[in-house]
Amino acid sequence: MNFLLDLIEQYGLLFVFGNVLIEQLGAPVPAYPTLVITGALLGRGEYSAPMLLLTGVIAALIADYAWYLAGRRYGGRVMAKLCRISLSPDSCVRQTEGVYARYGAASLLIAKFVPGFASVASALAGAIGTRSGKFLLFDSLGAMLWCGSAIFLGSLFSSAVSDLLDILASLGKWGLALVALAFAVYLAKKWWQRYTFLKDLRMARITVKELDALLKGGNPPTIIDVRTGLARQNGRIPGAMVMSADDDLSALVINPQTDSEVIIYCACPNEVSAARLAKRLMQRGYTRVRPLTGGIDAWVAAGYTVEQN
Image 1 (cartoon, rainbow, N blue to C red):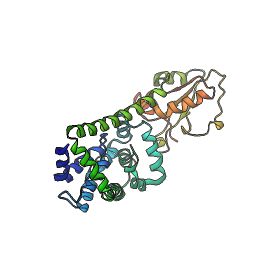
Image 2: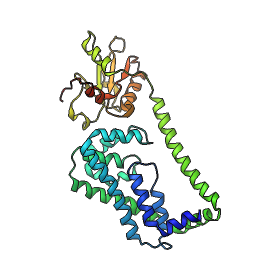
Image 3: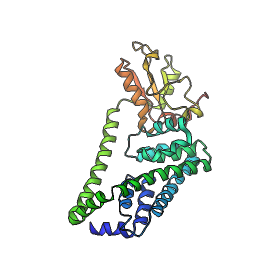
Image 4: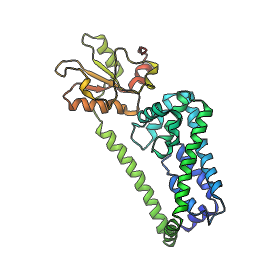
């Protein structure tokens, strides 16, 4: 443990840079505690508060701008990839789109305080064509707020943080083991949240080939598009009605006693938004409800047509 503390004290800036960069690139390695600790150790280390703040901001900007460029080049696909590797629940794309659609680039001011939001928001900013200058301005301010708040908290409670670190140092290898255990518990908790979230939404799906056959048959299904407005700009499956996964279902007119199926699709990993709405409909008596496997991306990839809004 003493070795780890010596590293933080002597190479605090490099340690912070690497931790912030890795976290903002999407790895589940929290950097906020590192900023708090290094903020508390300002008096011991070989760095100043402005240098510590600048280091954290630059690392965050490098990672965020990389996601911004990826979003600009690959569009929504990069956001779906982000949520597939994330330990946070897979509804992050839809939530991020909703917040960004409402507040625009200004949402980047608080993005880093919301788990699973920062990387997706940066990719989304590139995907929808936010100007790079505007993105960098708001992202820089957001990074300064995030890093600055952690450093301020560390300096404010420096005595308590220092006492805790001294206790861990006195425990030697057991102190390091406690830190490793806490990190393992954090990862396990995030993984369990994701596992239970997806398990709760397991249900029968329909393939795009089966949906195409239904549309060509004599009893076409009711199709519901639960994507956000931003995602629907490139068109939708012919005949689909627009709805949110969180909308009031009282306005939905479908006779659950008929043989007509209800097919729901989105553009999110594991069809999360579609499965959430499907589950709500089942609870209201609609038994023939299925999410579309792969969502709109699978439909387009199979070569089927879409209609413009």
